[in-house]
Amino acid sequence: MQKIYKTMVLVVLFITALFINVAYNEAASETPITSKLSCTPVPDLLADYKAANLWPNAKDEDVKKFVDKYRTNVKRKPDPFSKLWPMTEAQRNQIGERVLWENDTIGVLVDIFYLRNNKKPKPLVIPKEEMNFITDASPELRARLAIVAAAASDAIMVASGKQCDPSAISRIEIHKPNHLGVKQLHVHVIPPYDGQLTGIDDLFYNRVQSYLKYALVDLR
Image 1: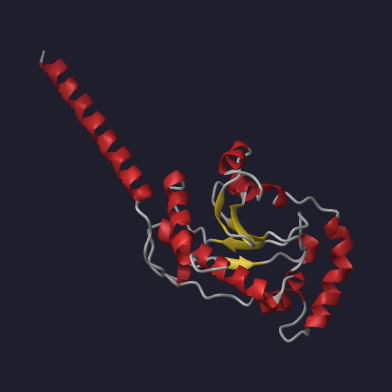
Image 2 (image 1 turned 90 degrees about the horizontal axis):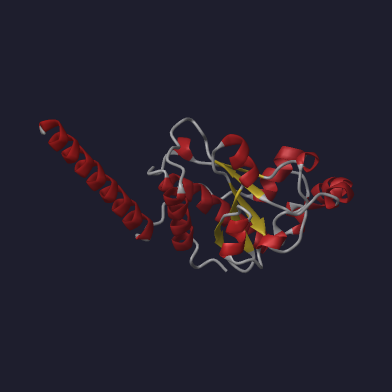
């Protein structure tokens, strides 16, 4: 009888703990983030692209001539992104896509290819207008892409429960033209996976979305 009683107590305690955990997760996911980290420096995407592909002080016309050598080949690549923008959230979910933030000109997606292969999240920042290279974007759009990429890096930190930590800042980069697998311009936001980033679940993504919604509320 005593063993039965102890078993019943343990079951009750387990169920109670389970309900507390579910309630905590639901509360956390519903609590909006209302502070901005502003930890990740906003990059100069064109300057970084010049430094990676040509030389730091390359002229704009030089980098345009450089990418044009690859344009015909890149245009033959698939575009898995543009079809997502007219979709509803439910339609995106049906094909396994997760949009973390978007406005009329830019979207932030989880890189599902990277997630499938590495089991870790990596945001992609993508202009909705069709373009192949960073040189195709206007200076204003380049500036907005950079702001969103820096905010995505901060969002990963916040969702991971971190404060502003230089070692936790994501690497922001655009792949070289001969390394592209798709034709639409996209900016990679690559967190430093040093074993500290854990607990990647819906709650994590909800916090990323909440942070981006708050941090980019004024971005047009």
